[in-house]
Length: 278
Image (cartoon, rainbow, N blue to C red; front, side):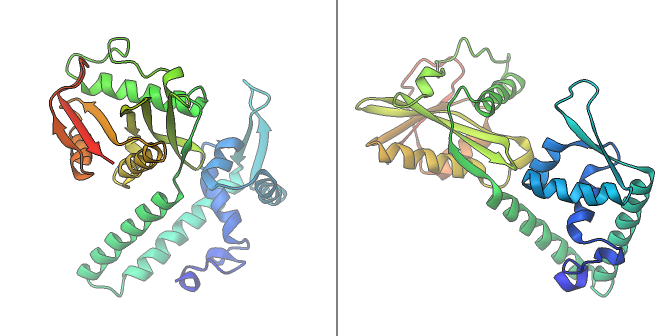
C-alpha cells in the first residue's frame, strides 16, 4: 500500500517533494497555522519542523512571520503558489483514492472504508498518553473546567461546582489523591482522579473525556489506570457517584464491574452510587 500511494517516493503524488513536506503544506491549511499548534498536530520536534519549513519557504510556498498580537507567536501561511500546490495535492489525492476504489464492488468499498475507519480510530487511541499530573498544571485545569462545563450543559438545572462534594487541588495532590490527564498530540483530551481516605474506600472523581475522542476506549483506559493506582496504594474498594444524565458513564462503570449500592454520601447531583472491590 505504501508503494501504491507513493509514501516511499521522494516525489509524493508525482510532485517534486517528499511526503513530509506535502503533509506540512496540508496541515498549514488555507488560513495558516501557528508553529506551536503545527508542531503539536504533527508531533514533530522543533528542529525537524524548522528544516521542513525552510525548504518550503525557499521554494516560495510558505511564509513564516510573527503574530501582530504576540511577537512570541510565529505563524506559517501558504503563499499563492503554496495554495495552488496544496490544491494540486488535494486533487491528486482524490484521484488516487478513486483509482483504488474503482476496481472494488460496492460491498467491498463499504468494507474497506469501514476497516480504514477502524484502523484510524485504533491508531489514534494508541497515540493517547495517560499520566499523573499536578492538578495546578494548565492541562489539568483545562480538563477540570471542561468537565464542569459539560455537567452544566447536560444536568437538569445546570451545575454549580461549589455545591458538589469537593475534589480540590489539595485533595487531588499526592498523598491525599491524584489526577490523571490524557493527552493527544500534547493536547489534553481527558482526565480522572482519586481521593484517598486512609483505610476507607477511595473515591473516583473528575472522570471526563473530550467529545473529540469518544469511542476510542479512553474512558475505560482512564478508569483502569485509576484502579491500578489505587491498588498500588493498598486501596481495597473504590466508590463513585454519578448523575442519571451521564448514561455513557453509567454503562462504563457497570461494564467495568462496579455494582450499584445505596447512597453513601449526600452528593446533590447524584442519582446512582457504585462500588467495586479491587
